[in-house]
Amino acid sequence: MADQCMLGWILATLFVLFAIYCLVIKKKERGTKKDLLGSRRESVNCTATTNEECISGNVSDADVIIVGAGVAGAALAHTLGKDGRRVRVIERDLTEPDRIVGELLQPGGYLKLIELGLEDCVEKIDAQKVFGYALFKDGKHTRLSYPLEKFHSDVAGRSFHNGRFIQSMREKAVSLPKYVQGTVTSLLEEKGTIRGVQYKTKDGQELMAFAPLTIVCDGCFSNLRRSLCNPKVDVPSCFVGMILENCQLPCANHGHVILGDPSPILMYPISSTEIRCLVDIPGQKVPSISSGEMAKYLKTVVAPQLPPEVYDAFLAAVDKGNIRTMPNRSMPAAPYPTPGALLMGDAFNMRHPLTGGGMTVALSDIVVLRNLLRPLRDLNDSPTLCKYLESFYTLRKVSCISGVISVLAVHLLVAQILENLWEEKDYPMLLQPVASTINTLAGALYKVFCASPDEARKEMRQACFDYLSLGGVFSEGPVSLLSGLNPRPLSLVAHFFAVAIYGVGRLLLPFPSPKRIWIGARLISVRIYPSLVHRELSSPSSGQKELDKCSSLQLFLHITDLLQSCETDLTRRQEIANFSYAGQIEPLVSPLLLPLVQSRLGNNYPAVITVLQPSKNIYSLRKNGE
Image (tube, rainbow, N blue to C red):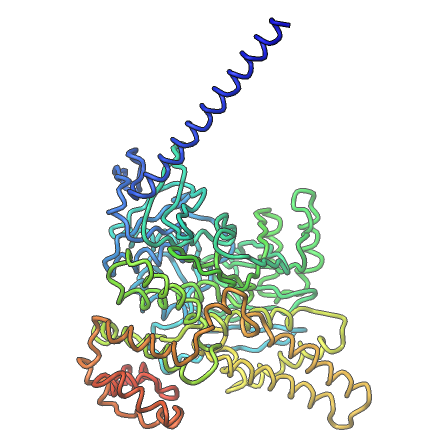
C-alpha cells in the first residue's frame, strides 16, 4: 500500500511539474509574439531580393506591403512607389508567368496605364493594337470598332503575352519598391487590425513583415482572400487555350468572337506571329487532354464552326498538342472592411473573361486607390486610414451609388489628378471607375452569347447579333461599354432594353401570334431582367451595407474635405476653368446643393465644376488644341 501511495505521489508531482512547464513555455511564446507585434519589427534574418541585396526586417522601410506581383500588384507597387510610399512586394515566383488569360487590354485599360505612367510597358513586347471586334454567327459576321475618334491616335486596345507584360511592369517598378521572393502564409492581426504578413522565403525561412497597410493582390487562386472577405466564387465554364501560328485573322487587329455551339470561341493576336484561341466549354468538367478526348472534341465540334482563314492553323495547333485549360471564375466584390488591409485585382473581384475586362477593372481600382491615398501623408494614422479604405469600396462602384450628389463627390475626388495630367501628358485620360459596368456586362453577355435550346434565349442571341450589326450608335454604344470607355450603367441598361425591344419587335411583326407573344414576354422578363439584376448592381453585401449607412451627402462632404486637404491646388489650373462650360452641368445638380458646393470649394469651384461636365470630352479639347 505504501509503495502505491509513493508511486501515486511521484506521478502527481511529475504531472504538476509538466503542467507548470507547459504554462511557462506558452506564456513566453505569447510574450515573444506580443513583443514582435508591439515593436513592429521583423526577424533579424535577411532575405534575398531581385537585386540580391539583403533587406532588414525593420518596419521603418515599408509603408505598404503588397502581396503578389501580377498585373495588379506590379502596377500598384509602381504607382505607390512613385508617390513616395515605401513599398515592399512579396511575390511567390518572380520568373515570367505563362498564362492563357490576361492577354487583352481594353482601350479603357490602356488609358488607365497612361494615367499611371505605365504606357511604355506595352512597348518592346511585340504587343498588337486592337481596334475592335469581329462577331461571327452562322456564317455571317459584323465588325464592331472601338469609338476612338475623339482620342489620341495611340489610344487603342492592346493584346500581348501576359508574362511579357507583367515582367515589363516589374522591371519598370524595380527601382521604387523592394521585391522579395516568398510565399505569404498568413496575415498578422492585432486587436482586429492587420499589422503585416508572415511569409516563407524560397529557402524555407519563416519571416514576418510589418506595415501600416497590407494590400493583397495574389490573384484568382488567393489563399488570403478568406481572411478579408466571404467569397462566393462561381465557375460557369472553362477556357481551352491554344496558340495558332502562320495564319491571319479575317479582320486584322481585331478580337474575334465566334458565337459557336455550345458557347463562344475567342481569337486575338498576342504577337506579330501568334494568335491566341480560347474555346469556352460550359461547366467545370472538360474532356481529357491525356486520353485524346479533348483533341477529338476540338476537331469534330469546334473546328467546323471556325472561319476558313484559321481552320488549318487550328487543326495544326490541336495536333501540336500544346493545349491548356483554365477555369473561368466569377466572384462579385463582397468586402468585409478590415483595418490595415485591402484586397485588389482578381483576389478581390472576378468576372467572366469573355469581355477581356479584368485588367481594365484592376487598373481602374488602382487609380481610385491612388487618388484616395494621396492626401494621406502618414499611413500610421490608423483611424483616418481605415476611413479612407472604407471609402474605396464605394468609390470604385461610383456609378451604382444612388443620387446625383454621390456622382458629384467622386468626380470631385478624381479632379485632383488634373494637376499632373495637364502638364505631363498629351494623351486623353479616362477619369471614372468602370468596375460595375464591365462586371455586369461580362456576366450578361456570356449568358446571351451561349447557345441554348430555349426559344427565348435563341431569339435573344439572334437579336443581339442583328442589333450590333446595325452599326452606328447600335454598335458603338455597347462596344464603348465593353471597352471601358463608357462607365455609365444607365447606358448599359438602355442598350439591353433596346436589344429586347428590337427582338420583341421582330417577333411580333408583321403578325403576332400567341406563341410569339409568349416568347417575347419571356425574352424580357426571363432573360433581360436577370441579366441586368447582376450582383454588382443589386443589393450590396453585408459589408457593403455597413459602408453605405452614411448618406450620399455625408460622402460628398467627406470627399470635398479630402480635396481641400490635398496638396494639389486646383486654382493653379485656371486654363481648365477658362473652358467655362460649367453652366451645362449645373442644371443637373439640385439648386439646394449648389450653394453648398460653392461654399465648400471656394475658389476651386470653377475648376472643379468644369470636370463634372458629362457630355463634352475634355480630352478631345486637349487633342484639338483648344
